[in-house]
Image 1 (spheres, helix red, strand yellow):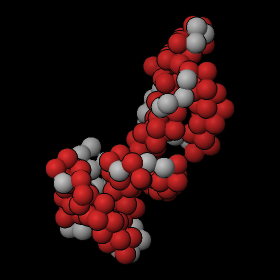
Image 2 (cartoon, one colour; image 1 turned 30 degrees about the vertical axis):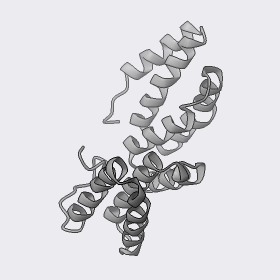
Image 3 (cartoon, helix red, strand yellow; image 1 turned 120 degrees about the horizontal axis):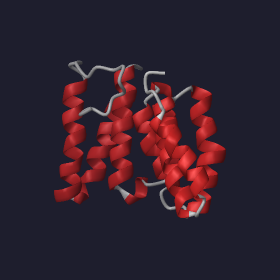
Length: 168
């Protein structure tokens, strides 16, 4: 899963590989030349957005925005995360959505995390029929329930995760 693409996409495009190299290079800018990270990021985003609409374009845009979100405090905003989530939904990329959802509740305390996952994110996953995302959310929900002392509910969610068939 080197490219971060969902299971239905293939990275064998002559367009994808050069841009992927530039996306990987953003990490080097972040580590060794932070002053040039944002100009390089902005330039890459503009080039990707100028591409014609395609699965590859959306995937590259999502991956680049993820890098920006992770590396630049000015881009670590709810708006940026919402854009990433919208692209991941369009792509049907459950792996990316699992990361986005985890980011949405990462800093919540356990009771708030339980509420967020149970009342908002699980219905979201169900509405799209995404079993892999549902299993990831149920696993995190089970951990949060356990930490809240709700052991029976936690056990029930852990069992559901083990019974999830990703092929469904």
